[in-house]
Amino acid sequence: MKYNVIHRGDDISIQLMHRFHELIRQYGLIHEEASPDIVLSIGGDGTLLHAFHQYKDQLDHIAFTGIHTGRLGFYADWKPDEVELLAQLMGESANQNDLRAVKYPLVEIQITTPQGIETELALNEFTLKGVDATLVAQLHINDELLETFRGDGICISTPSGSTAYNKSLGGAIVHPSLDAIQIAEIASINNRVFRTLGSPILLPKHHHCDIYPRANQNILLSLDHLYMQRNDIISIRSLVAAGKKVKFARFRPFPFWSRVREAFIGYDMV
Ligand code: NAP
Ligand code: MN
Image (cartoon, rainbow, N blue to C red):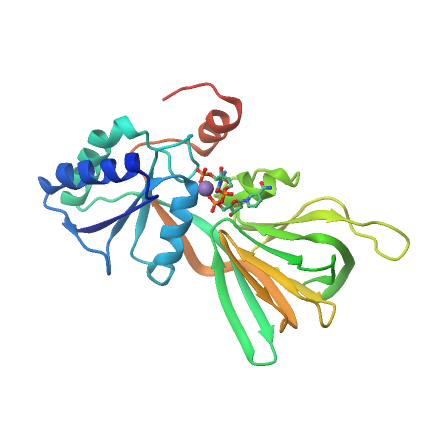
């Protein structure tokens, strides 16, 4: 079995990486960057987002796991002082060929431009904002107009991303066993011309949402930590990615709601 480590670049994360390499050697795992079976991220949830985008073309055979060197993460849910235990559990399950994993849904976006259609994936969310003015866009659900949006932007998140940007927007926290995406408004303007629903909504799989920005707008598009400015967008379709999920190695149970409690409420249970 092959593994790679992605770290945040700070001294503590780099030290932990060296320690992990040392510990995992005795189990016969091979360090390989090109096509690993397990990717360990050391840093924060942001570090795992980097790891995800580095390997998003190999999601079918990679399981991710993470150690947090800052506050408890949602993706990075191992503590630095558990590195020995993590290496042991990973080593043993690799040798027994029994790598348990949970699979979480992703958001797929299809960007239509005059040049064609580009497809992208997000682990947390995709957002659309205006660059030099408020965003004006029509929002369609399953090919029917829902509303004309005017405001800062629109955020479309995955269940595992629901605890990130989406939560700051008043979105619901969604359990990652639900195949859904959530649409949340970012500061919509409501008046007689522009009227939006105002509440976050969840779309099940097989439903889709199309956003048509008004023509000639500079648009800021984000996918997780990646940002790009575009002026060639005709429309963007969002949906639950079909047949593509991200796998997280589960070497011990650490239920989603326990992570929610520990990250946001604060009782330390593990
Ligand atoms: P960042 O600005 O350093 O991260 C923002 C915070 O979000 C960090 O504390 C990060 O944790 C945390 N985070 C990331 N994914 C999370 C998740 N699934 N659940 C709970 N918290 C999560 O930027 P970054 O580290 O590159 O992360 C990019 C993410 O920042 C975006 O995907 C977006 O969700 C989030 N963001 C949030 C806001 C907001 O809440 N107003 C605005 C823009 C972006 P770590 O410290 O462990 O990395
Ligand atoms: Mn971060």
